[in-house]
Length: 331
Ligand code: SF4
Image (cartoon, rainbow, N blue to C red; front, side, top):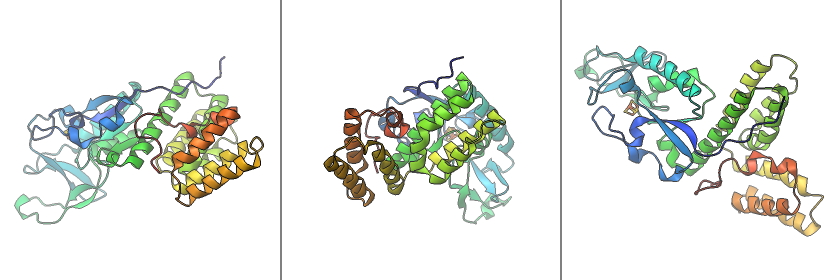
């Protein structure tokens, strides 16, 4: 049996997206929302699979708007005008079923529309309960999550997800793309079959990437894989959950500097004193915020081309996604 780790999948990867973000005129008022998503910045990386849950549950365009009503523990999606319209359960059911379908169709991430009572991931407005709309003067709290988005995330917790507005931020965008490519690689491993040796080989390649994002997740995953003699599918499920949780934290300057210190250690015995000092000084200058990450990575890459090291060069940290556009390490 060939136990080799499958190669990392190449772009374009398959991404689910709230359909209105593609420009499709599926919103309640017949409009689209293409300008809310940074299409140009992600050009070539993804193939998009559009989903509109409100259309999916049989609502039409145009349609009466809905909103979230209730408390944080008990939120329902109901009509703004007609409170008798309650689509909570329909959206939940559609979310659970769609998550399963997207998984089987090889989707590796999901971009949701912001502020939507169906698709919003963060800080969606939740209104207080009132049966008489005209008397409902309470201010909404921005603490909700769209009913459909929540069902997708609950059904498929390790799926990389992000909201369109946040993707306008270069750091968050790079983090999301990194997660999608890591998860797609995990899916390739799953398709090949999870074995102990593939699991170890996978972790060995993602170690430093994870260390940059979350030292806690780095330690937890290392502990999880320390003993693979037990329930392997269970360990793999816990591993990927922890990996994706860790990667969802944006890597800090301190996290990167920590990894760079480790990586330069592998080159120490090859470099002459002056080159060693130059690299060490650059890492420290980066740590202090005086140099961009790219300058350290460029020098590191230069030395690795002169003194190849299979283990270091296999690290996903050095190239977490295709080197295209202005994505690369904005920190
Ligand atoms: S936010 Fe979601 S439910 Fe609303 S139009 Fe866009 S895809 Fe459809």
